[in-house]
Structure formats: structure tokens, C-alpha cells
Image (cartoon, rainbow, N blue to C red):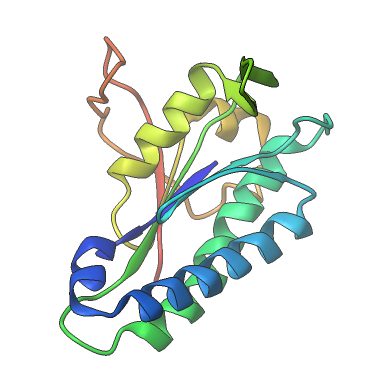
Length: 179
């Protein structure tokens, strides 16, 4: 699962460095609280983006349900944070992408630096879906929808296939927009 803030570049241009860091701390705290609730693992913070693994490194049978629950909870908690920061023309939002599939996790790097990595098509797809999600949207791949309980994907609807960077074929997706 990937999430990132919409409007962050404009927000950063209109605020001080201290304000930007304060926002990011609140944002990361909100995401972290949601991740703990589903026993996920935060893999990366990259500016205003976060990559979360659900079912790795510790496998869980209901990873799809947890990932969808996580996406909804992040949208809710981060929504509370950004409402407090939306004080001017630079409006913030949150976009989320969720994908399921085989992922290889482990330590990679060179002699001078090691890092925990997650690689695989599902990681790439979650990132690309996140990039396509508008503020308040969760984009979900069909594999996650098929693995999840019907109640988890209630409120999602099919999108027209998406053209995504690095994917030779258009990709099907489902969307759930904040109401």
C-alpha cells in the first residue's frame, strides 16, 4: 500500500520549513497509528509518500482485508491532520494505492550501506495506483479485491482501465472516493 499527499509541493512553497516538518510529523504519526492497527510494516518514508507492507515480513492470511482497512483508516486519520493545515490556497489531500501479489523482501545494499527492501510487481502497482489517485481516493487492484471479503470492498466501483508507467497493458482498478 502506498499513500502520499496531494498539493504538498504548493503547500511547501507557501510555508516555512518548520511548518513543513511539523505537518510531516503529524502525517507520519497518523499513518503509523493506522499501520499499527493492522500489524503492517512501514517500509519507506519518501518525502510525503509512504510505502507500507501488509503481510511482510510476517505473513498474515487476511492481508487484503487489512490493506483495504488500512487504506480507509489512513484516509480518515490523515484527513483529520490535513484539515488542520488547510489554511490557505494550497490545499492538501491524500491519495492511496493498494495492490496484492508476490513480493520479495529482504536486506539489499552494498558494503557500506544495507537497507530492507521490498520488490515486485505489486509494489510497483501500488505506487502507480497511488500516483493516479486523486485527493480522497483509494485505488485498488483487482487482485486485492478478489482476495478481500466482500464487506471490505463495499463502496468500491470499477474504473476505466488505467495506462500506468511501466505496465505494457492498461490496468484495471477499483476506486473508493471520500464522501
